[in-house]
Image (cartoon, rainbow, N blue to C red):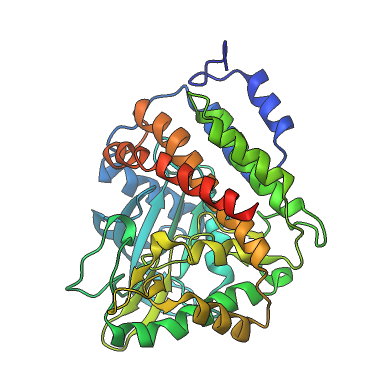
Length: 399
């Protein structure tokens, strides 16, 4: 790292990273874009008026001038992105005049996780009518009209937890009453199975590469992604990060069947309506990819997202269902087998990706004043070494 100014990366250094760490084309694009604009100004509060003007410019290009934007306001939630809620009065094709509640979801100057708004847009659109998702309308993939890349989707009704319940950051530690769990758990399993069963061929996912079945390409693309992010963003050499990367490369699993992977499938990322206990929308698809279903299974069953049942002994997957029951129900609903060894590899992989984001990207984005969430991001850095210790335990268990 000596002699490399990561805050003002040279074109030659960026080119060397692209050559060393081969991954999907769109991932390469968004990481390269991040580095190309890194030397620019940091985050500064963006007036709502500027965002409204950007949305107007986007809509003028998409639907003409027969619309009006009303009630623009900041929306909380979405820790890595800026979000603005507004109402659009317009003549909706096939519907007629209506007032639609919408949300603008946009990158900050530099996010703790740099992702593609185009991929997120395509994924949500691909699951319309298959699992509950908010309607998506428009995407400004490269920030042509808005300050940064953004998408616009419909406002979905529901809550992430009971109105009288408490939880930690991003829904962690949510405790659901047994009556709520019993209604939500079957939907939770069925929706994950439906995501993994989705036909990739007719999903319109042009911003995604499909890894080759029967090879380790899928896993290698993934590790290369986070290896590259570490090289781009870290300011210290952490031996456990290097050891984890080496272990992941030595033990790459073979992909038996490509599936669409949500990559953050858990409590806190779905909404449900309290009056009938129906899941109304799955959110936060930004890290989704075409990959190995075991990545989702490993993520969803992480103890970090679990909570204990009333007996104080039974750990519930995402606060909903015991792990053995969850996996058995998933196999039945999906018709797909769960391979314990592959799932274990993805537990290490998932922890590695989060450790990289916290210890490297989060640190650099906060230090350089690139994010609106600098306090949260700095707080998260303290968790990074706990993750490394968990990775060490997983690797030792696997060996």
